[in-house]
Amino acid sequence: MGMAAEAQFHVLAVDDSLIDRMLIERLLKTSSFHVTAVDSGSKALRFLGLVEDEKRTEEPPTIALQANQDVEVNLIITDYCMPEMTGYDLLRKIKESKSLKDIPVVIMSSENVPSRINRCLEDGADEFFLKPVQQSDVNRLRPHLMKSKVKDEEEEQINNKRKETEEEEEHSPDKTRTKMEPQKVVN
Picture 1 (cartoon, rainbow, N blue to C red):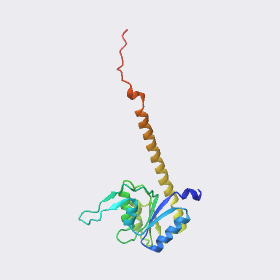
Picture 2: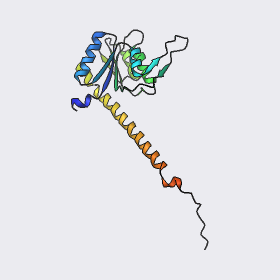
Picture 3: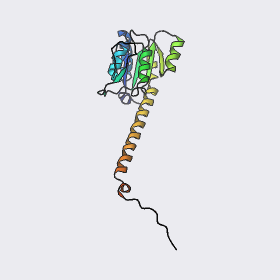
Picture 4: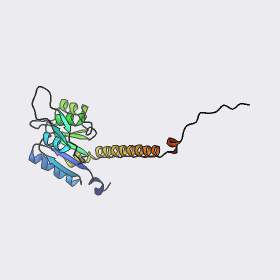
């Protein structure tokens, strides 16, 4: 697969550390990915079109999808330890969203804590990278991006077939014909 094929993939990188954010951004761009980098989970949610209700009440914050979100993100890579919202919290919000749940999410951390890694993977993370992230880690993203691309193409084909079927049914001569009851033949 050539570099031009990967250029179409858009990765959202989330890390509160400027140095780590710059490193992951450079590694992703070296692999010809389009990268958007943000420094917090809440900014990632806003970029994705999810808006957190800022009112702090006894109920958990609600999330609403903004109608004007038209940027397609093919993969999200996020740091685990961040102030306010952890990478795990971001993962859960993404997986709870009907419109975003199929986007692959990769968590990265400088701490090798098996229980944390397992919890993230069990709750929907596609990969867990230990920092510092290396080029070999970035190379492991391709299968997840391809899965996401195939799923998008399948959904598009299903939607196109559905539209074709609906159009055929609208213009079908059977819709305009009157149905006749079968006649008994008398000998």
